[in-house]
Length: 254
Ligand SMILES: NC(=O)c1ccc[n+]([C@@H]2O[C@H](COP(=O)([O-])OP(=O)(O)OC[C@H]3O[C@@H](n4cnc5c(N)ncnc54)[C@H](OP(=O)(O)O)[C@@H]3O)[C@@H](O)[C@H]2O)c1
Image (cartoon, rainbow, N blue to C red; front, side, top):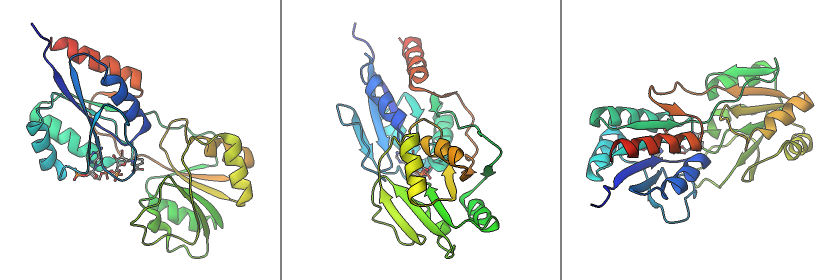
């Protein structure tokens, strides 16, 4: 008797999601579909079937899960990707579909100079309040316009890829670079551009932590944007634990 093949949808957008997709694809009895929003050229580069683009909100996602007869869902999106995670929670609840969230741990404050804010808009207000002058804006490419009105400040912006949709970016310089970035490289960058404040999302992970360590070493202020509220549900913080969850789910269904 042949083994039943289960179908897993992984919502991607992080390095961990790619690692998970590659590993999960080797599990017997599992067909993996990897999904990306299509904002970057990130992909699994291999044998994993990848689909690109939004589903069309929660109703579109429910429809997709039904059409593709998905049995298991892993939300491995970025901790700041709140909308897709909310849609995944609603859709899996509606369909009674097992769902796991893979979310890396957040960074913990190193010292008292770490200023926590709950949004990009609050970060912009804090920059004004503390009269920052030269800022390293390390928030990705999507929401740079939030800082556009701060015309008396200069911004160093770093993104992985050019964004065709850049319309409004604050005054300063845009550089393209892909991590990981280590502490000494980041220290040199902060020195070269005479940065007095770093604005960062609390993304967690090692790949982009170097700038926080470098800022601490140099006494550069850090404004840390806190994560949006997390969806309820089973959560793991690393790929190995997500694989354990998958193995248990596959075993349950033999
Ligand atoms: N926000 C960040 O700081 C950040 C950083 C690094 C990577 N990312 C990744 O970039 C993507 C977009 O981020 P965001 O902040 O714009 O997220 P978002 O606000 O939660 O998502 C916006 C819309 O993009 C579509 N989408 C998002 N992730 C998708 C996926 N994996 N597969 C298919 N469609 C997806 C969905 O469209 P529909 O409603 O039409 O389904 C969603 O409603 C996410 O996958 C995220 O993991 C985000």
